[in-house]
Image (cartoon, rainbow, N blue to C red; front, side, top):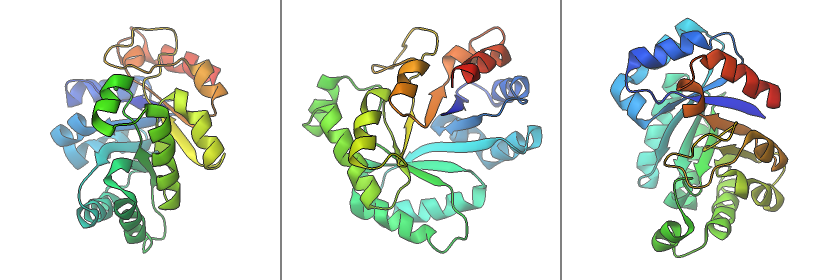
Length: 227
């Protein structure tokens, strides 16, 4: 299991300061929608200047018509990131089109599909998708595997089931991890590191418990000891 640190701070300068504090740790860095819209490709370059060994997860959750998603995926190839994601609910044709477009590249990033956002409660999810979270997450994961993707974004509560119906090598990345019982914030389906590990999760994403800490490097170190 690997740790991915979410760079969700309000300014580029704060994110860079956080990266400096944790630069000696072997972790992934997650660049989300707000950060990328605000700071763009230059921010990705700034990360690599601090530590060229950092791996970057570009968390933009692509969702559009198939050709537009494939165009965006091809553009992402020029950014030098190591992982990005799309929405599984865009459908198998869209996901397949993305993967077909990437075939011409000698080396591509890991590509994941978002199943059910961890901010959804059961009722909220059912009102949108007319299905329970667990069943739909399984279906989305199967669709993603059939479309050639490497794995999915899901909560820790769906990981084991997804691995069972796909493959143990089919990756699961789990947001909403609260390693030491911290407040859930706007997340509904949260878990600790031990539970995620039991469920076979490959990547855990941790944000607030790290960047709100007085000593982020110490917290990262403690989390890494649990992996």
